[in-house]
Length: 344
Ligand code: FE
Image (cartoon, rainbow, N blue to C red; front, side, top):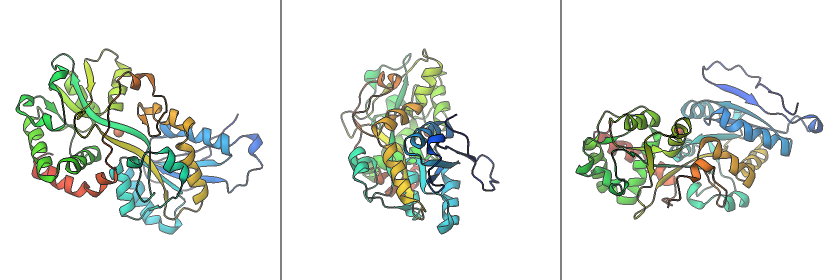
């Protein structure tokens, strides 16, 4: 037995929180009890535990973690303040990571290893968060009713030819808030608003609550094209390889595909900032990067890492390399814009 589950010894009263940990085996018994790091993660347990276990094997540093949604974890970090146990905050979407910086929950990290591993547009210019995997938000279309030649940019989905053919997830989703924020960054507010108004006019159905149901509506014939994160398509495709859907890489003649990240930062009041930084550096390393994205059909953040076969089968694309901090900076503007455009 290399590892045993090491539960966090705190009272956890909130439903849905998962608490777990990793621990080194016999040869690491000499490790001081203080050699551990605590992570608050909105990344699901099955996606992080294999990595934490490898980290513990290699470094002897135990990882304790709490998982919940990003909002509750940020509220918890805020209310715990200096008393928090958390050294690392891990979540999805630059919009959420930016929120964490706005609430001063993350401390800057000065790490050459992280700066070399992670492309500049996928990390906070001030070093408070770093992308660890990349997700692409682009078009998934019906292979039965759409000629891929018809598809182009995000803006093109506002054209009349898509009337009654578009399905979208709700504007409540931070994924769409970030997408629209990046549209504002690319096109300016006025043009971005025209695009979103056009999308709303082309909707075949009320916005859906998640990416999977949005895509399933395309497969079921309710609409012809949807904007989703490709890893959800990966899940659908691995369950049903014959699903009559395919990916189109948006904006290849323009700004490129809108990408986002899952990422992490060291907390403002970390008790073990060195171990926290070491964990981030390790997660950005070649071994972890090959595993991190693949666990969820995502892309590695680090360049030069082989992609998982299913993901590789979707081909190459050019991504928008605008710094993702813009997704946060323009988030409020994006939410207001979507509201004015009638996007619910
Ligand atoms: Fe997701």
